[in-house]
Length: 216
Image (tube, rainbow, N blue to C red; front, side, top):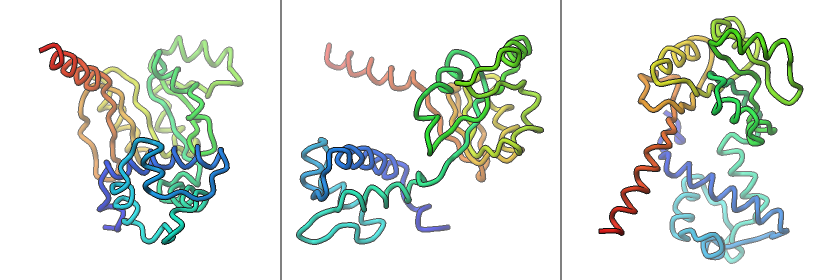
């Protein structure tokens, strides 16, 4: 187990938040910033920033704070954002096609290289009229033969709940290293192919709870 394996997902999530802040500071021409100033400007916790960054050594300079460019580059490296990660989307419905067009998935860091769907008519229509602005669409049965050549590391599941596990297994069997799952269920995941599940209803239900609590 590496030292990174001991870092919690909450800490990793906060590193992503810090990186967004640093990118904004970089675009504004800010060269140095202290943890207190960073926290004050972006409504964060200075002590939490220092604690999180301490996991990775001395990243600041006493009396100066953090050099924005240096810390931005270090966080990009720590988060693996200094390399391209290819992804495939399984499920070319409304959500899948919307994600394929998401600018963040057509960047130098994350790039959707293909979609797969089990609707043969939809696949044939897309192949007869290919789009320069959208990744190619293939039938789901082609995943085992195409995933290797596509060089994808990430899989994104936007299929119905009943189809999520079987598609996860196909992805895991054919070289995909991690999966983002939008189906509303917990998958039986393998240790070698981690899953992050995004269940929008959970967040909506949390908001409903907060509304009810305020009303009471």
